[in-house]
Structure formats: C-alpha cells, structure tokens
Length: 64
Image: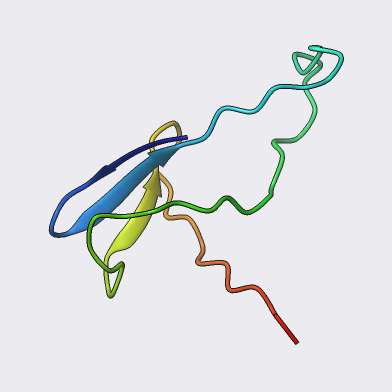
C-alpha cells in the first residue's frame, strides 16, 4: 500500500497479488479493507483511490 496524505485528503493505492497470478480475466475489482497508519488523525479528510479518483468508504470493524 502506498499512501500520501495532506491537510485535506489521503490518497491511497493498494496492490494485491493473486496466488495464481491470473487477475487479468476481466473480473470485478476486489473489495476488501486495508489498514493504514497515518501521520495525523483521519478526522474529516477523504480517502481517495489513486487509480479511479473515487472516494473510498471508511471501514470500521465490529470487534464485538
């Protein structure tokens, strides 16, 4: 994962590897959470996917 943060936004890129290495089959993108350590608290900053430019949702695990 590569993360670049500024005062307004956090831009992230996550690269995953497949065990068989065959992800170029036109299938849908994988949707899974990733943990990132930031220099400052996230607060109201948006997290943006560097590839699509889309805002990524905040994932809050249910620890109960």
